[in-house]
Image (cartoon, rainbow, N blue to C red):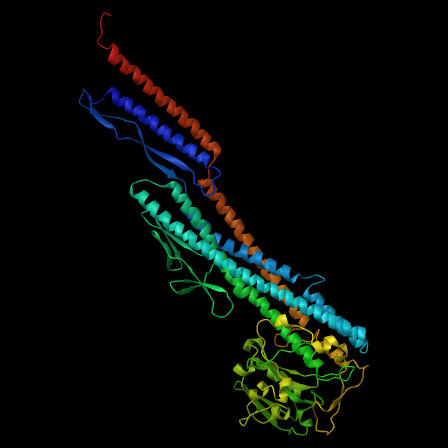
Length: 621
């Protein structure tokens, strides 16, 4: 067995000390990083060194062990749990951000409260009712003005704060995109370092931990997919587009919109990117959808509120005899759109057959709205029947009765409040013309007439609402400075020529004690005038607050659900990769004893060598 030597045994023992020392160093590293965020515990992977095969004197071959070697230091990590964590983390951050921002919106509306819009709206109706009880009372008139001003100020404040939230969301989008770009730069750099280390046969565990931590963070910001390559690199995808490939990253480009809003969008290779998950998607949705939805609702509420109140108010008389005065400042018509048109003439009775009006024959009249015909038998059907038929079409045109039984046609939100661009009305047999609408030579409603501010018809129309209507609920300066202009008096209507039609000049005031116009305004509280004549102002605003509450509650529930899931996954991840101090202390004792034992073997062999060198072959001393 010449192949065996005492030095071979010494080498085997020394290898044992090296192995246990590596184990102790790994334990020390684990304990030192027990509270390091993102750290994965490490474990020494030991294996026996190749055995030594030697022949015996009897001719058989025997393998002698030569010790132990360090195969690798293994990082304990479950890639399946990592994928699960990043998938759920996208939803968690999305819904957490959504709920937190919706909660801010709820606080802005501050409902229910004494200073909320709903309470101020109720106070406005109460002030109108008090005016109807005492139409000549100057204190009641002044109170109505102050209540209307307070309502307008509150609408303006809430709307302005929603605009500020939009801007804050946009700023946060820019910040998040900057952070994403920073992370992708770091990931590309780590990819390069990990690839180089892997080529030399090493396993850069700490670099891998840093990369996984960045990937976890990135998954909460935007919807990513991570593919791991054989050389240790990862490829990070957004949809089909790689944003980190090897040691290269593709940065997002932030561009300001050209629509004058100063908001930003993001691009990759000149292609517009729309995030579909993560915090970034929540911010885009908040800015472009959620906040815009509630701002549009406030605009619709404010626009219709101004129009409906003004429509009634200008038909009445103030105690100073004034007539045709708007209560709120009307919207100016400058954009070439028509929201509402009203016939010049009302009818004596909207429920009586139309043929009771002498210019209207007892025959069937046809009206076409966007190429869909409506027929009205004037001998049997009334103006109210015509209104019902128009509304049943759901064509984007809403019909109603004006304050003096005029036919009023409005564009709905479904056609962007614009009759000119979206609605064609053909007065085939002249019924609308008889009711005071302007038509051209082809019997089509002539919108150009209503766009001409020099025409008398201007008072019967209103430009389509644009963004910011809620900022313009202001009491008319004439009324504010002199509440005598408040038109509580509905006036007396006279069919002076007996034709069954009523024009504005066939009307005169009844006097300071009349309250019929105030009662008409008060009736708007419960009158269905919004959403295709299905909701009152109070119902509309209550529905808005209810929808906001439902949206916030849904976001909260989804956040909580994903939080539960992420906690379960995190707990399982920590069970796999987390450092257990008790376990590491046990390993420390194990490696310590093994090291001591190996060291004792070295000592024993050293004594053997000493005996061989100094004492072997000495006789008679």
